[in-house]
Amino acid sequence: MSDRYPLAELDDLPEDLRERILAEQEKAGFIPEVFLMFGRRPAESRAFFDYHDALMDREGNLSKADKEMIVVTISGQNNCQFCVVAHGAILRIVKKDPYIADQLAVSYHKADLTPRERAICDFATKVNLRSDELCDADYDALYGHGLDSEDAWDIAAITGLFGLSNRLANASEMRPNPEFYLMGRIPRQK
Image 1 (tube, rainbow, N blue to C red):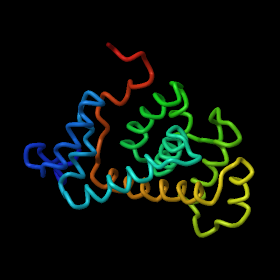
Image 2 (image 1 turned 120 degrees about the horizontal axis):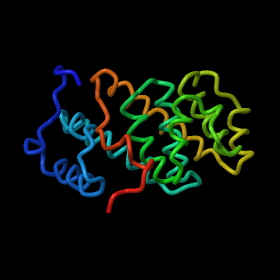
Image 3 (image 1 turned 180 degrees about the horizontal axis):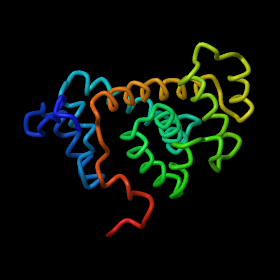
Image 4 (image 1 turned 180 degrees about the vertical axis):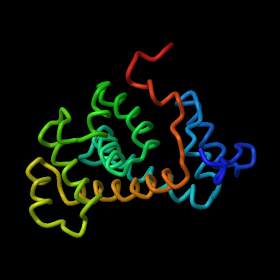
């Protein structure tokens, strides 16, 4: 990681951010560095994670696995090491599949996906790489798998939010915590 953007110190953060980070630490067993990187700017950190939570925790037709699949797919396209590794770990855990994240990060076209999952990745990819070319056929492909306009919005919003995250992670040379690499690959130690 670059010295250009040093991580915030936990003790120097406002109480609300410190509490959130400690809750994440309790859940994961470590502090994901993204929280300390974004913590450098508390107002932006709050806004980012509030939007993150609004999207990723939203009830709808997209499962947690679907959402993490979007993040890993577009983070691979954007060459974001941090997000591929960190969200790949979450995806492996929620899908109980040690291979899926690596497949998606390299090429979702070669991944073991259902037709519905492939349609989601197709739409996210078009939003990520060529959003100006979206047309009715792209939406119809989602509708054919039981998804609706609100799901399309969620796919686009997740893609957009993580496009932002990918670019900030790359610009700051953010590296994934070592713990992420093994999560979901081997049974968790009790």
